[in-house]
Structure formats: C-alpha cells, structure tokens
Image 1 (cartoon, rainbow, N blue to C red):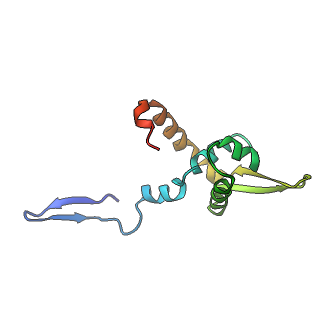
Image 2: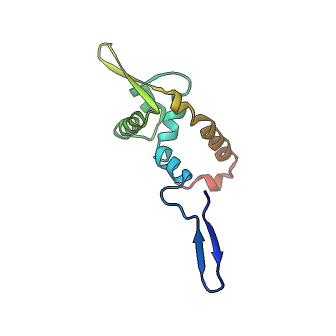
Image 3: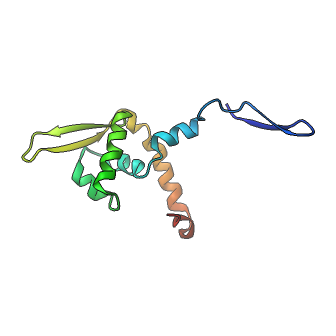
Length: 123
C-alpha cells in the first residue's frame, strides 16, 4: 500500500500511511548492511571458505565479514558448514532463499555500472 498526501484546503493530510516498515525499508533492513550484497554475490556460484571470502571483499575486516555472515545465516540467506580439515575451516553457501535476492542485486550492479563516475564516488 502506498501513502498518499492530500490537501484539504488548509493543511496536508496523509492517507494510507505505513503502519510499520514499508516493503522497501523491510528489504533494506535485510540486505542493506555494508558488504551484505557483495557477500551474497560472491557466494552465487559456489560455496566459499571464510578466508577466501574475506580476501574477495578487499576492504572488509575479518570481524566485519564474520558479523555479516552471522546475520545472513540467522536470516536464512546463507548456510555455514564446518569442514573437517586440518586446521578446521568453515565454508559458506548461499541458500535458495538467498538466491531470491540475486536478480535484483544483479539489476543494482547493472544500474550502478551505468552511473557516471562522479556519482559513484559517494563513499
């Protein structure tokens, strides 16, 4: 449902205001954290070990990667497997639910790549 702004002659009145987070805000709360989309994107083709994933993300600290992966696992977007290797290592894989985000992450990637360079340097 979309909120609408109307004028009754003297003041503005909002009808159909969101009672809670709107669907866009809800989606951003799930996927909007820094590195979240990149993590899902890097897991799209195959499971990846933690250290390899941290290297793929470049500017993210291992602490940040671990935190994001924990959140993604809690939300059911990735799964975690402990590998019985010496030393023990951990591998992450995108779930079927996580794959549902890939189409719009790809659309976001395409949109972002189409922006002029001066609009992309917002960080």
